[in-house]
Length: 289
Image (cartoon, rainbow, N blue to C red; front, side, top):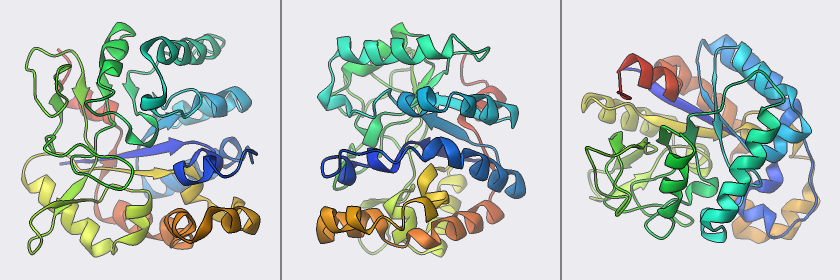
């Protein structure tokens, strides 16, 4: 059973605990993609790159670089605005803007979407109809437990055809597949905790994440993890002490904790499990009929 690796290609200043405090942009994400691709080559891993449209517009060459290496390109919003701050109309405009830039290349439109900050829930489920209208085949925006910023309790932990009426329910006749990110139920606690990536990748021990992946694989489901592009190559942001000061203790802790070790921890996971893109998994398992 292969696991699924996704990389959210966004600027450091798109991060949820950063963007409300700092208005400037460092514009580094486009420049670090070659480093990320080299790292994945060395690890013999394939991934889905969920790309923010603003990054693509500033560094249009990155999508071709990603595809040339055999990875999948997904849509991560145009401006990295959470769904609860958009409407169906403004969300459609973000898709149209991304597609208009994409039309200048030879690349195909993406089939997968990840909401900024995993902001798909029952309050923003309207986005699923917009995705269907635009011929997306899957979404990967649900964390099946609650966390500080996101999460949908009681959502399935496996890939499922999501109901447009209730994202915690399956609809066998549905048109959009949901690929939830990894969570893990701790034996002594009895409830699920986020385990997929970002802060949680940096916070939890690698052995616990390996245990979580083994557990979901044993159930016959792929474990889906994610990492931000700037977490793989953090040297571009570590020197910005002014930002860290502005964030305050809690936001700084979540944003910067263990960031120097994120690549090393990811390397350990990629060394112990076989990872592929969501699209490859869909095609191999005939998910889309």
